[in-house]
Length: 229
Image (cartoon, rainbow, N blue to C red; front, side, top):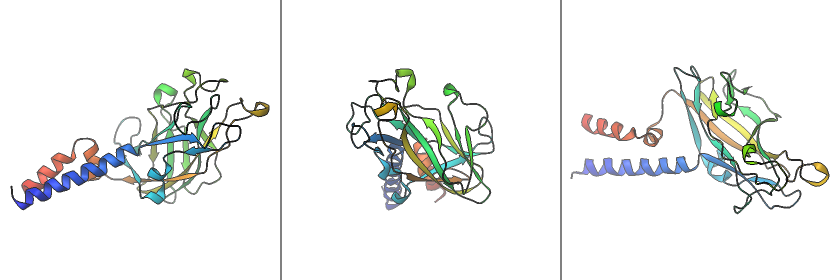
């Protein structure tokens, strides 16, 4: 095996490692600092996805289908179970709140609800860049499993949602977790809102090599590069 083969093998291994880290960081989990009245919600793994971590979610262009003409991708926001370490209290009902969007001038950042959850052919929210002070919410707790009722688990892991961008470039979106239950003191919520986490999304013309690893295509890219070397 020559040095070029070793180099390519090392590059593949490095790419696979980076891809694995990226894939495990594509769930943002809402938990809480405790399960008592007024304990604040938290993004349990915010350090993995926050803009300060260097994480960037790539949004790639769709040429057909529901997202035709838009750059799209997904991070699944979830609510932890009350039985998990750091989970919210029984009876709470967790929603994600988009509070701000920064990005290319004149562009829009969209959130699309899953088709199984009532989403349609247009984004649920289509937010102009430069928007701040927003309170655009979507549900994380699974109401079909009883979440939101007194004594019920607030857990939720709902798929099929999507984020889109209208123009190439970097977008920074602020997310906050809120409890909208009525099972707390005086018929209000149990938990106080979380701090805001800012996540970077980049609309790109095509997937990077590391994103291709996640779809099983990077190997082909490396092989083609080796043949052409």
